Image (tube, rainbow, N blue to C red; front, top):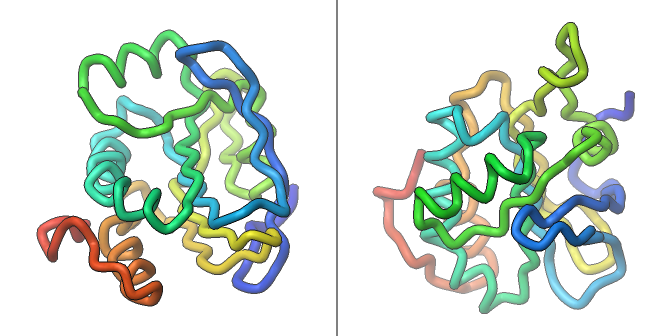
Length: 169
């Protein structure tokens, strides 16, 4: 299995499903802007849902800076769509049906049966030409500080974040 892309390395192109439309969405390079890829264990994970909330707080600032955002989970499209409706969060949550995206990014977590496989929580920020600018793969399900990482990155871009320190996870 590939290793996660590190800072300066080229990130893989991926294709995932939009659970609301059923359409395949491709994230490849070059593009005009940055790409943020967030891997989640699932919407059942309280740590992952907190990360989605932190991302939602920064979504407007990210989009103003030309970001494409992909939050990925292997959960079924039905479960992902239900979560978005119930939570009311406006985040782009995609279905990694075959775990190919998680495998390409080196964050696939193998369990006994393919249906139970997960991704290590991880955050990647990728530049327009596919260069990995930020690579954070969690050591546990609870150490993915999305709010803090996004505030730091937006600070480097000279863009004030939409939240202050309360978004730090």
